[in-house]
Image: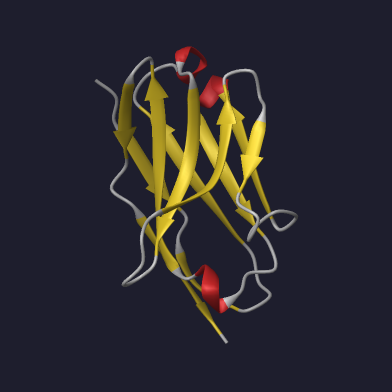
Length: 115
């Protein structure tokens, strides 16, 4: 079993920055991948960014060049640095971990970007 706890969400003006953190209850070095998803009101969840155990990253087109995902295995933490935020980035952001064939999710953290 893996628990994931996100933090770092909040209210920010357009053009601002936020850094989300996701702390896992186990050694993330053994995880196949970790990622961030988001869900805006009335919309389907979408992948924002993910990082493999080998450090390979993948981003949604809408955030490429603005967001950066990283991981610190020593702290069992994955980060999402979000720059140049836009109102359309407003959503609940969820951390996700894939361990073999099992997916684990955090409880989510709200990000609101005002225009």
